[in-house]
Length: 396
Ligand code: NAD
Ligand code: ZN
Ligand code: ZN
Image (tube, rainbow, N blue to C red; front, side, top):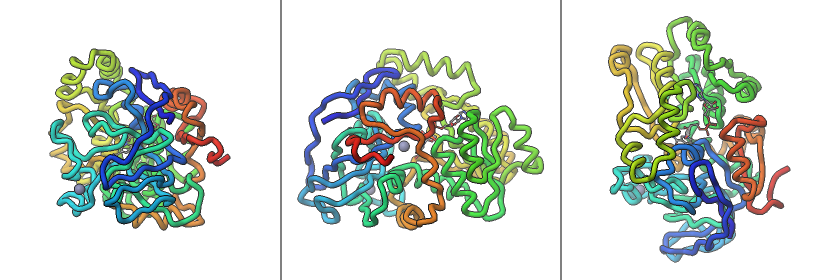
């Protein structure tokens, strides 16, 4: 089958690889009908090469049709239509029962001291082959699949794999109440949806991004937008008190810190044996967004970090955080936990999340190298990319 594979720093190859088979009785195999590219994939493309092997299959936002079912799978049959959450979870351990699927004790990566395995996401998260491919093996399939009973097009359901629940969790963790002011940093796909969800819940939303196309999309959805160098104007818009909550939907590759960017570029090119300990033990993250979040939140407010951070020795302003009496919540999204609340919103004919206005680029698997580059460089208005392994399945 064809799959999008990582080769080296900023180089992908659409390769012919063996199709997956059932390996454990709890597996299913799906034929992928649609599969998205995520801002998290860009961290693999740019920064985290030390934790991927050439040939590893990328992707963690797929959906498709079940083609094979392991003997211990009880909830799925051949022919079912499913969307696949990015965390691989058992549904039965102490963490899953608390709704913390990204901490699943069955799939935790204890050798790296890391949480649950994720599709297509490095040796830190289990080196599980990803979903930018014609077929995908889904481990622990009863909990790692969402069966779709409705009949809307793929593009309505696809983002239940990651970015809708991720944005939802970011807003939950921000403890947003109607009438409060929320600032969203970063208007990539995750920030777009977090801003829309916070607004849907009755908050006043201010959002910041350096890219004009991304600000324009947010404006179409009633969000007040600001360029990254206008933090003073954002502060004034909160009555110079700060926002009740700030959501950081940027993460480790925030623009605005050229020195750390240079260090990231160097690290990405080091041999794996040197880069791994550097990445694991040092402060490699570009912290412009998290520092802005701490500055822009009001005293006693909440900072919700949804952007991914990867350094273990980042310097944070603890004096300020302590003195401002902040609440800080963060983490990968426990996708499975939010699906019952989100399915009716996704299927609502009124499209309350404006999902019809998010995808900017569609292509086949062969288009992946070109579309990753556009998405990373934020060229040609690129905001969200969806790949169709069978071009005939693409929605025009
Ligand atoms: P993206 O790269 O498209 O979005 C990041 C946005 O931040 C871009 O629009 C960029 O212009 C903007 N930005 C850069 N520097 C900024 C700054 N200093 N201030 C304000 N904005 C700035 O990616 P995405 O798909 O929207 O993902 C956003 C983040 O969320 C990534 O770090 C991704 O890894 C993470 N993520 C986390 C989870 C989770 O489970 N927690 C899930 C999905 C994605
Ligand atoms: Zn993702
Ligand atoms: Zn579990």
